[in-house]
Length: 385
Length: 135
Image (tube, rainbow over all chains, first blue to last red; front, top):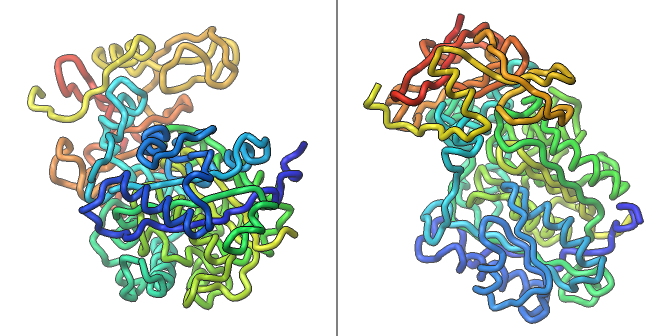
């Protein structure tokens, strides 16, 4: 068997957020999980009892199973950062194809803003990060996600104005999403003149911090066709991991994990870049999806800046990107990768309402994990080419 | 220095020579005796060729600024002023994270690839942190 043989063998059949997302101080992480899981199963027309594979990251998968009242045959808690749920699509595909499970539930939730029922995060002082990064002022994503951006600016002349194009375009999409947190229009000047957070980023180049949950459900394609909604077929998957500390990233202008992951997904799918109708590329910061455009091969190294100019990724532009409003304007609870999957599913089903990309048949979801530590890619379609 | 409130590294047996060296004003890193490649951070085998035949040597403490960010709200232990978090590329090749000290936290004044040199910061009696400044 080769990866190509797996193309189209499984499908996303359910996808949803928790009941409410944004600022939700009245609910713990586990409740946000449970709401998302229930909504995604409802969306699929499946019951909790149908689930025999439980996948999650950030929350222990056995704790989640206990809370949901599921005793799964198979579980996976691979946690490599925000792309973990995209990566678990590949793992679920393999378990479904092996016949080990019939229905996979991939669930995410974080109380990123209100911190209700959140576990600890970070490394202790004897681990590499505790010794070689934390004492110098590495203090979470605003510092560590930004280091590659400065290098990219130096090497390729990428500008903050180009990064601001992404913030502005993404906000326009958010205005059309009923669950988005930030909807007011913004300009390039607004973005550049916003409060500086960490050079090169201002506040409007940084993702939101919210409480939210989301889940998707997958099953084999033969069964998917009998369920409630139109299946979204998994055409190609890929994953990779390069490092665990950003200071160890071999070349800060390009993520090896993203390149490996994207190449695998495109090869398995047989889909050409020009056939991608919609792209959901994790935007922890404005530059993050720009780097993905390069590493996934949509543009050459260093060319993402000019590519995103003139609102190309906005509604009406020729490269619809982050059509849910992204982590920048819709929601970002911490590990945003799940929301790329939910939005891709909605777009490929044609149920994205006002923000629907006309005739979208094939799309891509991609995210980094940690500060470009890992990468995971999904290429999906409403048809199997 | 006793008023330092920041996070301290807790050396492991594999990394202790690096931290001990800093206390004596030496930047000690490792090199593979088989493939010849210097590397950082410390570990008892070569991350390139997997050889266990590795040794410690004293690096020059000179290098260049690979990349940086200016944190306008740094963690409290770094003070209230904007702080420059940096990754430097040592003359010998390996890169390490550090704090850039002595520089005006102004993006117009700090440039990638600028030459830098090590500065030893005795934050406690036991721990010396390697900071860098523009050369």
